[in-house]
Length: 103
Image (cartoon, rainbow, N blue to C red; front, side, top):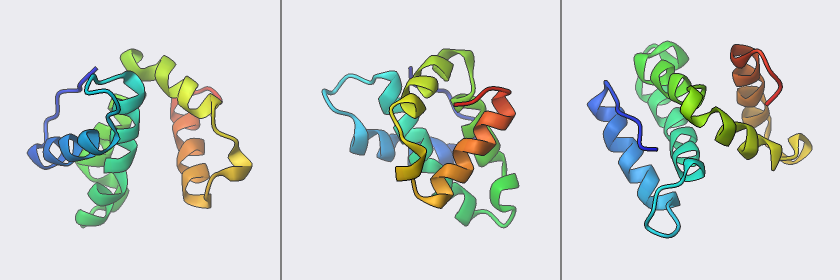
C-alpha cells in the first residue's frame, strides 16, 4: 500500500525512503512501514513544531491505519524491545498507546 499524503515534503521524503527500503521492486506493507518510520525523524527535526507538526501526525495516522495495522503488528512482533534503541522503544510505546494495544 502506498499512502496518499497531504504534505508534498512528506511525499517526497517517503518516496526517497521507499526506494531505499524496497526489496523486490514491489511495495509490501513492510516496505511502506519502514519508509514511514524512516520519514518520522526528518519531519520532526525539520519542523519548528517537532512531533506536533502535521507531517508527524500524518505519518502516525498512516502507521495506525486499518490498512497497515496488521503489518505494524507484524513489524513490531519481529522486534525484541531489549534490542531496540531507546528512541525506537519510546516511539513504539507511543504508537501502542495511541492504538490502545501493545504493538
